Length: 420
Image (cartoon, rainbow, N blue to C red; front, top):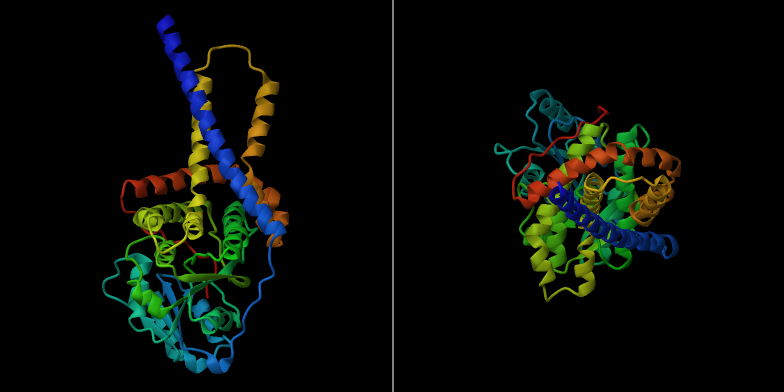
């Protein structure tokens, strides 16, 4: 019995030590997030946006990859209404659908609008990147603009996202800001849109201030010769945007973010869709870093600043690991502790202190909601974080672990709530 008690005591101190390590790491990451948030609050510079002369407008190809999503027609219709010169705008719907009735509707839409082309492929491997590569084969544009099917660009979107390419031949890619059409519908949309606002209203503006950026998979534009020169999209990867961004970073390409150019889209409507989306993104991001991290860190063509900022897209996946470690080691330290009187006051005060010290991501989310004029969602956001958010951590970890084990993962389609 004494030996068992001694063993439990050793285990207890081990778990307490592990808890403290996770806590200190979480505090360190949290303080980085606090710093970024305050930098965005107090040092946010006024962005000067260049304008496009219609006479200088280059040929542009809009690509809309889709699979069994009739809502892609709404996106195509929005592009047809664009202020961009009609003769210099090609629109391609990449239809990977396996539902004949949806493909028939897409064909009927294209028949009514001669400027819309439909691209299909017999081999539908490679997920979205494979679809994009297929569309690239018939893209005539100097600039490629990409929209996921649920995105709703405004009439001035294409001229504004193309303008930087015309004014600066060194610009390789431009990313616009994501906004959401359904941020307060339910806890899933609150959580999903808050994460989107945080990345687009805080992370990307902070990086852009220092001359760094990423593309995000939609509402983005890329110079075609850069895309072709770097080998096109990597088939099969679940976050083709981050993987290609890391390739551009490694090659020293100039990437811009336009914080004042919005594009509406839908946040996942259900918790299950949100979980699958975040699991896919976690797998894809970790996979992309596994491919490119060594090359970026050992590169002699890019500076330290760019190497540091290249890590930012993966920073959000540190927190789920730390939170899991904190919860697990906390429970195990309690289970292995010697029996004795519990001090509720001390437990409460230490818990509050630890939550405050590790609340950098929550504070950043509040800043993002404020800038998005959605601060009214703050308490719903808190509720979503401490309910479905805790469940979501499991799926994020599953995506991370699957990627680290070099196992493939399927592409889970997110259901859209609106029909065209």
